[in-house]
Image 1 (cartoon, rainbow, N blue to C red):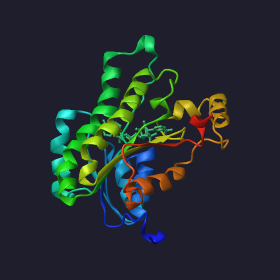
Image 2 (image 1 turned 45 degrees about the horizontal axis):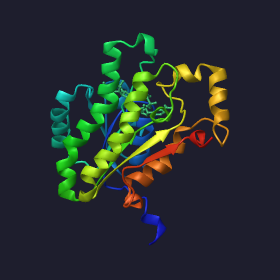
Image 3 (image 1 turned 60 degrees about the vertical axis):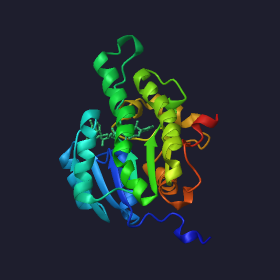
Length: 252
Ligand SMILES: NC(=O)c1ccc[n+]([C@@H]2O[C@H](COP(=O)([O-])OP(=O)(O)OC[C@H]3O[C@@H](n4cnc5c(N)ncnc54)[C@H](OP(=O)(O)O)[C@@H]3O)[C@@H](O)[C@H]2O)c1
């Protein structure tokens, strides 16, 4: 097998939630630059518009709040109508309400579990028929250090990310026989809107870097290679897995 086409994603149609910022936007940019046709999904039009106008490659955006599972099917059907059936679904939208266990509210719990855990499943269920017809597909979820570690004031976030780890296996069990592989990327600490409170704490930022084997926190481009691997035929025999991209944080 020649190396050069192993990571090819050109002409693939990608739906990606969370494309207005952080890891989702970086992933959307990486896939578009590598020739995929990328549809970014989020709520903030100014951010998505700016991304579309400045990103190299074929991009478009769709404004949607994907946190309400009863709306997801219709949102996805509308995007399919405009853009075609996706080959790749990237579930990058996520929140951390950072409530301490003693103070978790019903609203905070539901918001977190809805967006971080229910939405990836119902997004996937809404695109699966098209992927089955193609007999090929890739679904990428975002897990976290919090899938395996208890982080401070992140109990609902941790529950959602622990859930994502198992959801990823269960999706793989259901759909891999149709050529649709599901995997999750578990990033260490990356500077985004989500982690502003972490990176604003200089001592914590330093401790997090020291906990890695490599000795630094993540840069968004560190996620590009693992993403291309999981989105391309390189990962034809890889499914139901969590790939930690954490500089060795969890190895220590
Ligand atoms: N940053 C890290 O170090 C880190 C580490 C481990 C895992 N992760 C995971 O990686 C994923 C991306 O995180 P990030 O750090 O890039 O966060 P971020 O910069 O805060 O981005 C979150 C994205 O989710 C979108 N979003 C939030 N609520 C939404 C809703 N109701 N409907 C549609 N879109 C919504 C936001 O867009 P709008 O506000 O425009 O809707 C935004 O694009 C998350 O699943 C997160 O848990 C991040």
